[in-house]
Figure 1 (cartoon, rainbow, N blue to C red):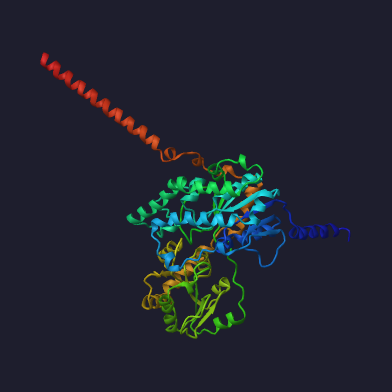
Figure 2 (figure 1 turned 90 degrees about the vertical axis):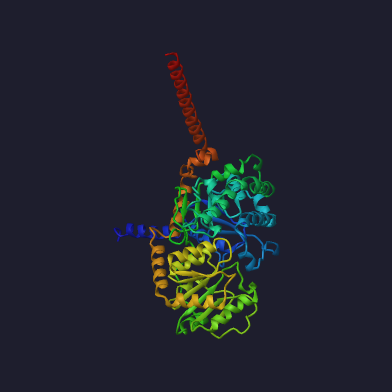
Amino acid sequence: MMKTCPWICIVFHIILSFNLPTNGENILVFAPLPIKSHFGGFQALFRELAFRGYNVTVISFFPLDKPIKNYNEIVIPFNKSFETTIPPMIMTGRHFLTVIPLSWYFTVKRAYNVLSSTVLQEFIQNDDSKFDLVLVFTFGQSYCVTLGHKYNAPIINLNVLMLWQSNSKWIGEPSTYSYIPDARAGVTPKMSFTERIKNSIIGFLQLYPEDFIHLPKYKDIMDTFFKYPGWETRPSMEDMLKNVSLTLVNAHFSVGITRPYLPGTVEVGGLHIKEAKQLSGKFLEFIESAEHGVIYFSFGTIVNPVLLPKEKIQVFVNVFKKLKQKIMWKWKGEIPFNLSDNVMLREWYPQEDILGHTNIKLFITHGGLHSLEEASYNAKPLIGIPFFGDQHMNMRIVEEKGFGKMIDIQTINEESLLSSIIEVLENPKFKENSIRQSSLYKDQEMKPIDRAVYWVEYVIRHKGASHLKSKSVELNSIQYFLIDILVVFLISVAIILVTIYIVFITLKYTFIFKTKND
């Protein structure tokens, strides 16, 4: 009996080690932008860190459904001034030259609306907690980097989409316009000449004009709303942005583009994806009663199809009547006129669980990144109807990979929609390519959540990760693009050519003079 006691103690200790927090580090997540899809893409990471014993404080608009241990929330109250309802047809009709200025306008306006919140100001000005790490979102929130100074803690960037020039320039990542597209340009790495011009213009606007037009507004926001004890001594915003320890990117090369990264940038796309759970009730009954399968139709959390012109809505209604498949349509608003019996309307669906069901044959989507990740994971062919942002680029990539088709909402009609649906459903190449896409997406050395946690812990262990940064962040444009070297080279060549010319002329006239004398 005495001999077994040590073993019992060891086993008991191991069991306890799995149930009790082994870490004591405090992590702050600061997310003052009320865009649910952006926050939701990383919320699984915050939950996982809390589960592993870290004390996680999350400031956002989106509380958990159920409280969990170590996950402490400060919820920002939502009010109508935060809403920006733009009709979908206006969003999709923007010229590419307006993409960057509109983004500047939107993010500044939203910052002034949100950061004046009493909850946020109370926290920023009076909180005296100790944090070992601060996580901030990069999309329109660069001013949040000052929290690293407030808490004397390293910063990790959370990038909700693939990197674009506004992010890349501060962390030293290359943004070669010839083959690395800006997500909002609507192009893929296979760019034509005119597409490279378009991509270069969008990149150039972020590289130089942004620093003189937009960045000063962010500095004003930071100086107005981030007044904490000692704020007067903080470094410049540029220096703080260059001092970020790590950037986690919601991207994966199998879903997006293949591009080079420095060690301090890590792809973790698919953090939110979970294995599909068994459906129940009316959802399960509807899907399993569909003899010819089900088409799932959702435009995500921002685009509300009820705001489409009536003639566009009627296109969908009329086409769905002609299909033998059933349709699950995410819809919030008045029921469309003359809707057929094969269509189910709901304001909300458990999308991941639905896409995981084998009887879902097609996913009609707006082309948002999370939808692409979930479709890729579950091997579902797509029809994409993009509106704005990265959606056009995403769907062009899907077409290049061969597991979906894109339709322009501006020109959509019954014929184009019906023919596309029939083609994707009946041509086996789309399903075959979606299976290949799923295989590529799932074949990773570790799960995205484990990769993200590893790098978060890496930054905590080393109290920052400045050693991951490239020295390119210390160079100005003249040095980075070797313009000074080129100038010296051209001057040297010019001097050599002039010297050769002078020598030649001197020898020539010396020879002529000598000949005359002879």
